[in-house]
Amino acid sequence: MSAIAPTILALDFDGVLCDGLLEYFQTAWRTYCQIWTPENATPPENLAENFYLRRPVIEVGWEMPVAIRALILGIPEEKMLQDWSTVARTILAEDNLDAADIAMKLDNIRDEWIVADLESWLALHRFYPGVMEKLNSLQGTPIQIYIVTTKEGRFVRQLLQQQGIDLPEQFILGKENRRPKYEILRELISDRMISLWFVEDRLKTLQVVQQQPDLNDIGLYLADWGYNTPQQRDAVRHNERIKLLSLSQFAQDFSAWS
Image 1: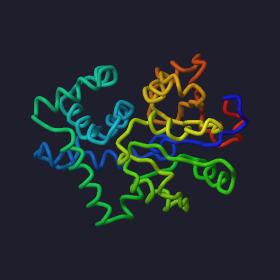
Image 2: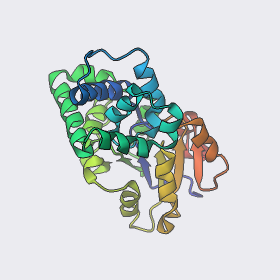
Image 3: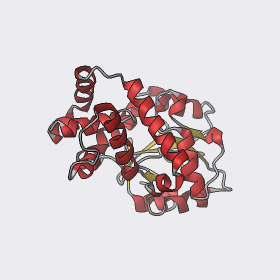
Image 4: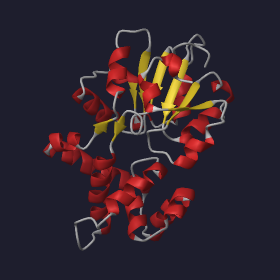
């Protein structure tokens, strides 16, 4: 990470550029209602707020309605934060559910919402202060932006276009690529002359990249404004490889990213 600026700036989307918590909960609740058919279609009091607090554990979309199920069942916060994978898989097994089927239901609900009322769907997404200005400032420079995300690329394009960012399709690498992020990053640096910096809000994702011996030259940054916990942020304060990045640093010149 000695370079003054990267050749490629790879960015996660949710939790780095866009805060989609409001939309996540609404889509997850609609999916939950379709699967578990509660008597009351109105979310219980404080359910949304508790969901927001558990958001750091969620890796992919199908887990969102399952997280709501865990909250409805009263599974303690500590257990969800410490052993979410076991909690999620147990709920699938107990209710005889399939992750791929839940993912399809959730995507269909989101698609139907977009077709029926695009404006209300877009309105539930908020971009973090200064991130669009940062992307705009890099337009026309030698630095190439890639979006590397588990969100569907088509949703990312719609949201970016609403903000006036028309990033070509080949630079948005979403869930449809069906590959771990470290494999995507490996492909992006196939040319050894490339310097790549990666900003992500999930510590686990960064740690997996860190474990790849051939990716030692990638700059790794944990976005402290995203979907992570104070404990995760504390864990990287003395990490020589993964740097904690603040939103104010992100908005500044790359020389401030240290």
